[in-house]
Image: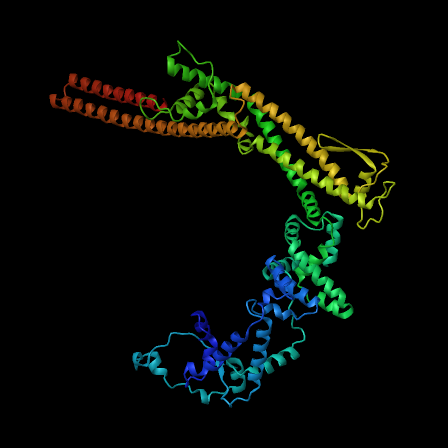
Length: 612
């Protein structure tokens, strides 16, 4: 009910007043006190008080409340002052607090202890709607709570709660004393939701925060994957968070000893991580280095794979003899359709014309030019129907844009330059005047040690090592940047060669040199798909036609046989009607011979048609 009162914009404490007295009589004294306090409030507003004005400026700058309260406490003032009303003076608000304490100290009349019951919200059926023969009518009075065996104290503790403040305090004190493992409330120097999200991510890593900070400072590869690195980078402290945490840590150090340890322990996990990362110089740049190193191989391999696919597709369409013959047959057929084979004949055509072959229909409005082309090929050069074997790479090349590959490589080069700068700055801090590494915190692997004592040369992506001693020793991230630069340089050479190859292919087909790879190979892919769809349709129609011709031949043979049999019967009936003399008998035998001869002719004719 109090929640409903509060939802409607009213004071929920009204529900704790005496229901038998008017609201006006019970609220009068409090209202008068407030009016008196307001009349006596002649001091400056808290936000303009010279002692506290700087702290309210900190809030305006965006610092979290926790950080500001820490600053107040550091200056030897009461941090709870920041929770007061900034529009009223400090004096009036402290007086009001004292007045309330006095009021609470006055003895009150004994009241019956109030309890709050656990509510189960259900839709009850009214008694007037309960019929005698219904379930509820039959079970009415069947169970009596007083006759049931149960622990009443357990029931009360489970389903009722005292509203007496003193009882609540006792219960809280009991819970505090009995629960030794209860979690302490963390100091919220940073925003609560951000701290909670960071805590969830950090809990999965299960690593000491100082160790994490050391890994970032050393730019160690392989400790975290890309997803974890991105998440950890998100929780590098902002300038405001850094200022608040520095103030809190500084205040804790002033306290010293156990008080300092306790203050640091009160920080939430995300705040502890931020404190550790604050000690790492250029933490964001170092996270970027680790992310780049983790993703580099997959990114450069994907680019190289796309370049190889494009190069193969260019070579396939240029070297395919079947494609060349098919284009010649299409050119001849379309010239024949357009001009009858004479006059102004076209010397070639652009690739977009290939897609129109399936759309153009003959005068029967059924046969497409592409379908007719398939029939022509089947009769003259059926080997062209194996075209798909020559251009398997065209389908993959459609989704690769050469300009996008060049853009990806350019971005990779820019990111690598930043990695090289960060790596060199970190390496210079660890090298002495003689160029040798000093106080290396991280371990160098055997391969890294071999590489830094070696001159590395890349030939077609294969590393070659020539043993030589360098004057300067490098940290692992610097060695990686050298290797990455070799791979990027090799990829830039390959993409340049692919660009030149594609331009020559466009020139070979007579296309505009501005045409993109996706447009060129996409057009070819769609034509090839339409070509083989038309081939399947033509073959399907041929099968149907053969079946229909076979059925027609069988039907014709049956009808011819019936006709011959009918003619034979008519001749036989005429012979019988003339009598059975010798001449007639001779005629009868001749008629039978004629019938058998006719049947033979009919059978031979049907067999020839069936075979055809």
